[in-house]
Image (spheres, rainbow, N blue to C red):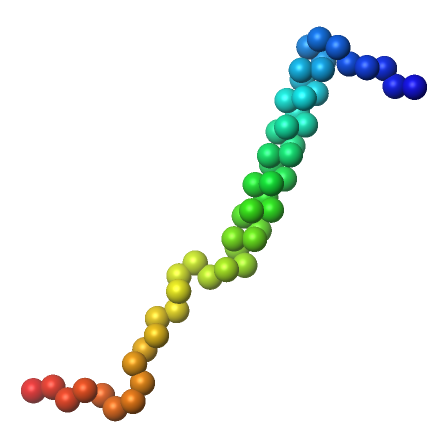
Amino acid sequence: MTKKLTGKAAIGAAIGSAAIAAAMLYANKRKAKGNTPETPEVKRPTGPKPETD
């Protein structure tokens, strides 16, 4: 069987696992955000050009 961690080892393991989970969530969020364009495309008017003086 495995030995249970106690004291400082248990605290360190908990902090380490939380840090790894946060890093994975952050990486997935950045990856998902990278698939979308940063700036929307500019819609240019179509048809005849307006007459100016």
